Length: 219
Ligand SMILES: C[S@@+](CC[C@H](N)C(=O)[O-])C[C@H]1O[C@@H](n2cnc3c(N)ncnc32)[C@H](O)[C@@H]1O
Image (cartoon, rainbow, N blue to C red; front, top):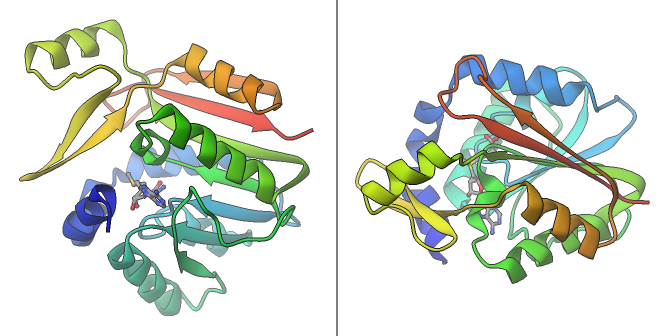
């Protein structure tokens, strides 16, 4: 079990407690602009199904995968309660258990992509997303936008290291990568994605930090 898995298994029960309902509705509305109901969608790093469940309730064909057995357990319970047809799988985004060209869309939301600190891991995850996507398919990644003020704050509190900072949940902490716009563009280009769109979502209602929405298209 790696550190991230341990972190989410431990705080797993209370990840729902960190959910901001206003933000959840906003991101759902935002991503639904890119989706349609005849697509096969993967919620990569789906957690307890915060977004997977409402997407399925809205008639989208979506599956979820996450490294935390605890969160996958919660997602399965919620799915059964709602009588939804979603396949939740425990697995690692660096080695996905899906065949090539299976999905039309891969979602990687909240801070999921930031759990990959090493460039090689970031590259590997995107490579896997690309492998399972059909031609013309898209990846939608949501990450925190770390601006100068936040960096300065983290430096002052010794939370900021070279390319990551510590995210704390009660007595537990995990590392989150700092990935800026130019890092995403470099990664996307290296992996041969085209039509790379990066949107800075400032002043998200219900969120105190700004976010990037990164969209890669497989051509
Ligand atoms: C902040 S949560 C976001 C959950 C979900 N995407 C959402 O929007 O509610 C980050 C998730 O990434 C998952 N995760 C981190 N590293 C992972 C990995 N290597 N493979 C699969 N899931 C991973 C964690 O277990 C956790 O559920």
